Image 1 (cartoon, one colour):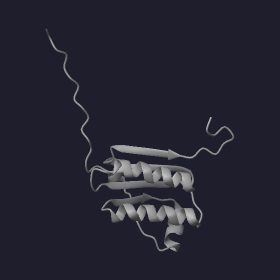
Image 2 (cartoon, helix red, strand yellow; image 1 turned 120 degrees about the vertical axis):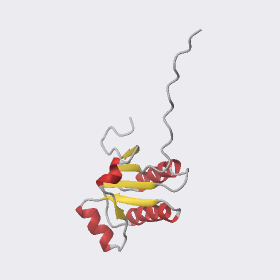
Image 3 (tube, one colour; image 1 turned 90 degrees about the vertical axis):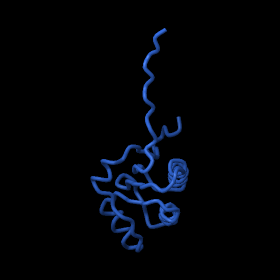
Length: 127
């Protein structure tokens, strides 16, 4: 009996950066989903986490402070937290004296996993 070749399993990308793209309004549900998702993919040890903030709207409020605290907790746990910013986010972080390294193109090329977390705000949301 001839056996068919077994496909090679995709190895875990330990050490490769993980990118998270946030879309929508930065509010409590989006932050909680972000925190839970990142905690799940970062359990294997220190990783580089790239957070794209170019498509998420934030105001200087409690949600913003909660989000920054979440990023800082990942950094305190030994992860390298990098951000991809637009001008308004850059200004907001600078005004709050909060600093994270920015993600460069080489780092994005090394990314093997990407999470997209989006908030739906339309009338048909949740259907």
